[in-house]
Every structure is written in structure tokens, then in C-alpha cells.
Image (cartoon, rainbow, N blue to C red; front, side):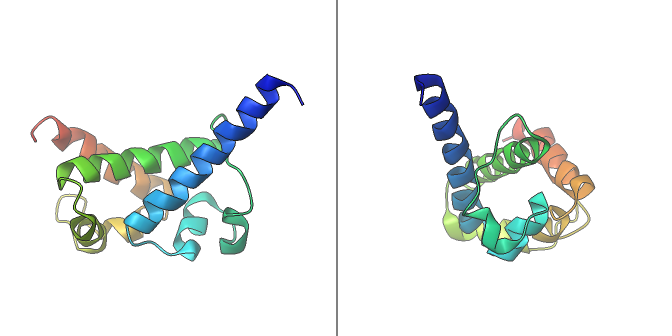
Length: 119
């Protein structure tokens, strides 16, 4: 196996691990994480996510959401979970439920991008 192939595999594993860790920090279940990317809950941890794929794009947006919330609440894990699972009048829904669809994912990331400059 060439070095570039090993680097690609490592990049895939890093993205998958970041997705799983961010999901756990947000208080999401494996089932919910699977629904976001259109995979079964058992196949998420066994597969790698290619950042250049459509699923990879979704995962990168998800991680962007996590990072924005992390900064917004000062890295407080309980506050991250609270933010995700509480009705948000600005996004007009519960973010943990909204991100289960592409349109909801974009609503949440759009909101966080808009307020990021105000914090």
C-alpha cells in the first residue's frame, strides 16, 4: 500500500471518528447519526466516510454545527446537549430533530453561521 493510499485511509477514519465523537457530545444516538447520513446505525462505526462524497459533505456540515455550538456555549458538554435538544425559536424546531433532514441541517448551520459573528 502506498503512502498516499494510507493517508487517504487515515483521512477517512479521522472524519468518521470526528462524526461519531461530535454526535456523542451532542447527545445523539447511533440511530440518529445513521439517519443523518442515510446509513443504518450498525454500519456507521464500521465504515469510513470519504470527505469527497455526498455523505462526507453532510458529515462536514454536521461537524461545522458541532464546532459552532461548542464555541457558542464555551465547550460545556451539558450546554451542547441542551442546545441540541431544546426548542429553538430561531430555527423553529429542536435542532437534534431538524438535522435529521438536509433542509433542517442547512437551517441549523445557517442560523449558527449567522450568529457566529455576534458572539
